[in-house]
Every structure is written in C-alpha cells, then in structure tokens.
Image 1 (cartoon, one colour):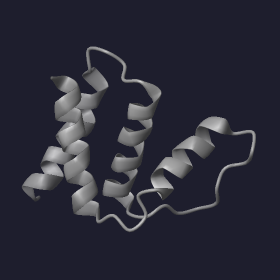
Image 2: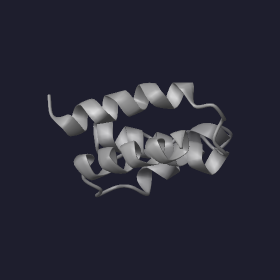
Image 3: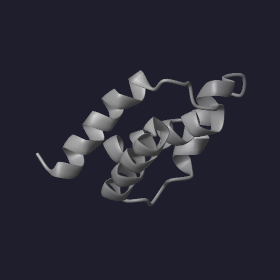
Image 4: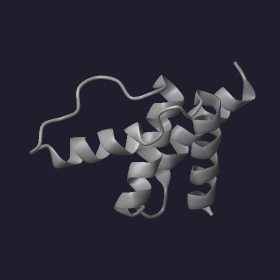
Length: 85
C-alpha cells in the first residue's frame, strides 16, 4: 500500500476524533475530498430537491470533478492535519 493511501486512511480515522466539530463548510470540504480521493469523480443521480444535506454533499463533490484521486487524497490529509492542530 502506498504511503499516500495509508496516510489517507489514517486521516479518515483521525477526523473522527477531532476535539471540535468543524463548521459546515469544512465538513462539506472533508466529505468531498474524501469521496473524490476514495471513488473519483461524482457518480449517481443528484438527490431530490428536498434532500438538502444530500444535495449539498453531491454539489460539493461535483465541484471536484476532474481532480485526480491522489491530489484529492493529499488535500484531505493536509486538511485533517490542519484541523488537528
């Protein structure tokens, strides 16, 4: 397993134990970077109009379309490190 992949997986664990809950914009950024790093470009249908959370998550992920998985993983790891202080 590559160093980046293991750092990415560790960051995903570390984010669960942050001392403070990040603001909603940061949470959306974490979600989008994680999904892009783990799965690549957004897939599946956009959630319905009344699914506000699902739609926000989908749109945040869709903004990263075209970003390489390695680049998304690195940005995710860097963001988690920054949040951990």
